[in-house]
Amino acid sequence: MDKAAAQDPVEAFLAMLAAERGAAANTLAAYGRDLRSAREEIGDLLTADNAALARLAEAWRGLAPSSLARKASALRQFYGFLADEGLRAGDPSAALPRPRTRRPLPRLLGHGEIAALFALAEAEAATGQGARMLTLLELLYGSGLRASELVSLPLSAVPRDAPFLMITGKGGQQRMVPVSTRASAALSAWLALCPKGGRWIFPSPRGGHLTRVRLFQLLRDLALRAGLDPEKVSPHVLRHAFATHLLEGGADLRVLQTLLGHADIATTQIYTQVDAARLVALVNSRHPLGNLAQRPVPAVGPKVDPKG
Image (cartoon, rainbow, N blue to C red; front, side, top):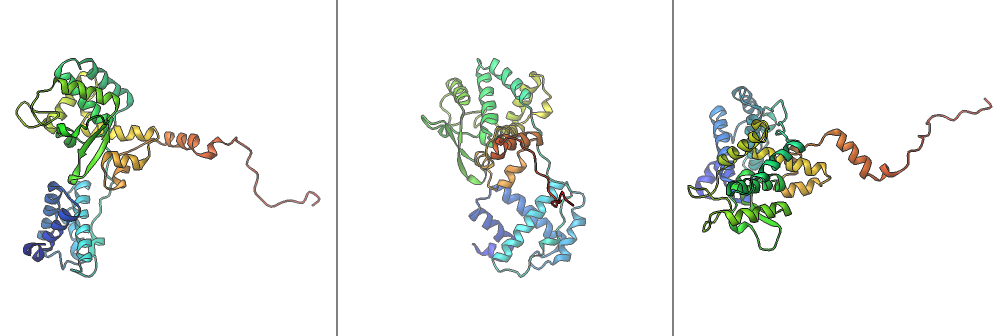
């Protein structure tokens, strides 16, 4: 830890996140902004007490629940760090305001809407742009990649003779993602047509790789031409559909956590949803008790002597 970080607990905390947790640059910047803005509101965070942190409720009153939750999370982690390092006694973060609503789940596309997107993409796959669109769609819905992971895939991510992609996700963490037979065929067709000599699977005509904004635009255009509401379609919605539809099919939540590249399984639970009827059907069909024949349930109660 350098001298400046040792003098400033906020900088020390950010240095720890970078070194020990591999936090991404955007995460470090957001946490830094949140902690410094809190310091502007209540003064020195190192000596702040419960009453000082409670005053943040007024300063944060106009924030969206998601923003309030992020700021509170930054401060809770910061005070946990201070306690671990012995920089202060006691943790005042219990006094932080809490959002009233839970984090909303993303929109979800149904199986019919997914089929409509693929039907159009497959019909147009004979052209170079069409082959690229089909490959993007296959990897978003078939492998659950994040938009940033997908557009920045280097050619080296495709191993020889193996149905996997090597993905570098948030915080520089690497994972192997399986690629279906369909997606492999689409990827091979696209690689045969895409410009040669570059390092990206999805190069941009202006140099570099396809941008997330352009990917978003391509998906919205495909949805509109497929007769869907373009406001419902985005890379994240397709990633969420990937996870939800796998869970509906009986996939294990821990497997989904690995496929999605989530550090915490709680995040996987937020990004997946299955209706109650499917869960009941799953229990009835998979649990051992579901295979037992129905039999009358014996009455429970005191025995009565028939002789009185």
